[in-house]
Amino acid sequence: MQKTENDTSLVWFRNDLRVSDNTSLSTALCQHENTIAVYCFDPRHFKTTSYGFKKTAQYRAKFLIESITDLKQNLDALNIPLFVFQEKPEIVIPKLCIDYNVNTVYLQKEWTEEENNVSNSVKQHTAKTVHFKTTYAQFLYHPDDIKLPLAKIPQVFTNFRKHVEKEVKVCPLISCNTKSKQQLTNTTKIPSLQDLGYKDFKTPANSAFPFKGGETKALERLDDYFFKTKKIGVYKKTRNGLIGKDFSSKFSAWLANGSISAKTIYWKLKAFEEEHFKNQSTYWLIFELIWRDYFKYIALKHGNNIFKIGGILNKSYQWDNTTSQIEKWINGETNSDFVNANMIELKKTGWMSNRGRQNVASYFAKDLCLDWRIGAAYFEALLIDYDVHSNYGNWMYVSGVGNDPRDRKFNVKLQAERYDPNGKFQNLWLQPSLF
Image 1: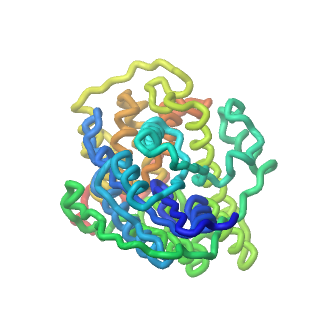
Image 2 (image 1 turned 30 degrees about the vertical axis):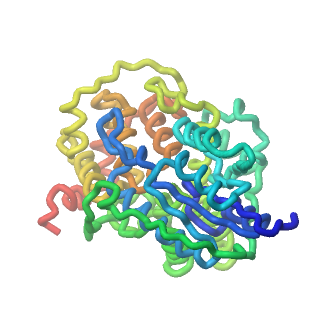
Image 3 (image 1 turned 60 degrees about the vertical axis):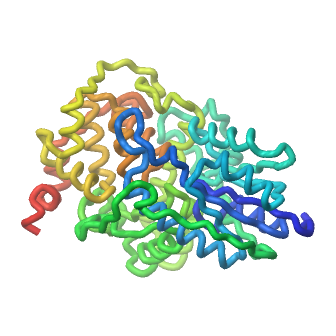
């Protein structure tokens, strides 16, 4: 497509905070003379929800600020100004389109209700002459390629995995080797934690997630985990670990806000396998990326049912919502030291291992019989790597209203004996003075 002189496009960044393998950005650069970008710290994302938790608490907020700071620097190198506002997108974007004579807005496609409502509101408030172009960019296996209608997405993960592994290829990475013609003046500023209503803090020394946000840090971690330390080679053996930064890849936080794409990880892994070795661990990382895709497809298929108490199975249980029980779980004051240690780790760092998450969620829903949506909302607030589809998909799964046909319950005592046999993890968080 031939570029039109003085033609300006706008890239609206949401959960795709990267310049590499970014369809919206690459298309805008390749098809328009000038490109500007915007990110909105939407005030709705920092309010208290009906469950009594901040929608975004301090840990993810700080990681987000770091990610936007890095994105701004990376866009500067492409002559693209990133306008940053602490305001609703439907107020900001229509005005930007007028001020900079924007004819096309590019954005990543979302499909959950809140995100859809915001997108629709922006379109309604923007001039009809402005075109909106959305693309799916969160997947490993693109929806156009999976050869399954949404209604036929399997209810069991294994069936989905076998299908995509056999029938679907991962698309190549997207790139566009060009820059915006003219970088416009930008005086907007990225808000601080204090601006968002939080006190600044330091990450505890014993945190399993000592990393900063942003595409640059994501790619550094990718290179370190794959090529420098080759920790990927033992991923399957260590992924259920509880202490330290290298028992798992930790890619999930950057994946969650789009600082890195699933495809980037996949193709880097394939390069590693060609250069070094291929084993069960290298496969298992792809296996986990497929799980991530699966929960996104489940959300596409079932819509708002992933947020309902009966889940996608519409199952009826006797759920409790006793405040004292919920607070004991949050504060690590239950009858299980293993649950308590994991909950204190989350409260102090914004991180918890996958093994910990499964156990504390099962304990919440199956032992305490508490409304699983409350636990999911607490995770949404605290977790640095919160992803709406994975979070609610996993909570439904362990609560018996999702994609687990066996409706299992974790034996937390046996899990602690297996994964923390010497009590090292529990002592780390329950008796920190010993370390």
